[in-house]
Amino acid sequence: MRWDDVRIFLEVYRTGSLTQAARSLQTTQATISRRIAGLEDAFGRALFVRTPEGTAPTDLARHLLPSAEAMETASVRMNTVRDSFGQELQGSVRLATTEDVCANLMIPLLAPFRRLHPRLRIEFVTGQGLVDLTRLQADIAIRTVRPTQGDLIIKRLTSTSGQIFGSKAYADTHGEKPPTQWDWIGWGSDQHYMPEERWLKEHLPQVEPVLRANSMQVRRSAVLNNLGVTILPRDFALLFDGLAPMPHALPQMPRYATWIIAHATLHKEPRVKAVWDFIVNQDHGAFKTQGSHPPEHD
Image (cartoon, rainbow, N blue to C red; front, top):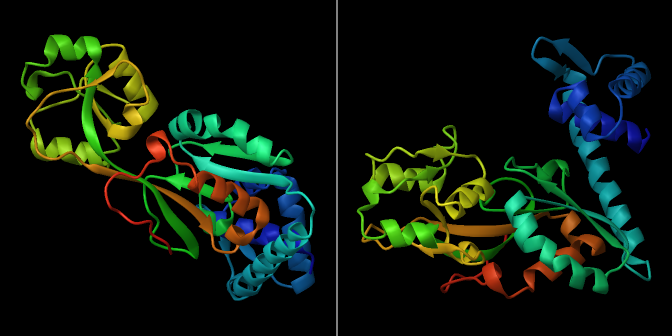
């Protein structure tokens, strides 16, 4: 059985959608349907059934899944061996993170990284949504949420506390007022699970944010434009001129950690390990771990 066909089978199985599988594999739905039909002809039985909710696996597909995943792991390992015999690292590494981390922490590292590895290419996958490393949707991820499942290698990059920030002008005019009279900028209304939102609800339940946004970059921009205050990771916020800590006697702010994560198999691949090691070995700005928290591994 060809690996290309198995890869399509796995993507349809995992996404539950021919359209989603085609988008992930950057091909057409017609191609996905044709290849699945070819597999079904080879087995003489259906692998998936169409339902109102999407594409559901049959019993045959469920029995084939472990073998297909083993073939996927073997493919990754073969690529690792192939790359390890190259004289110079080359290829592409997909790195998933938020737009803010990408623009302000990752992009400044690219020039020195490219001098070390001129034939390695970086592809950023940005957004608030989490990619699934167990499905190899990215090679490396940098997240503020530590995964609890999957065969993953995890290391803490940073640990810092939150702090309430306003613009310098806002701090001058509102710093002596009580926090309940500040104009608060919060996460989106569907992001009540964020640590800042939980802290605000617990300690200032009477406060209703005057502005909400599902992006840290937008919230920070609102603060810099004198629209109010918001809670930001202290070390990260101090990278930006114009932000000022707001004086207060409120309880301890939420703490933040940043994690770098890779699939255990991919982590050993030379091109991925080169990017991982370069990021981990940085020691400046927001990449400095505060306090005595040792790095953690899975």
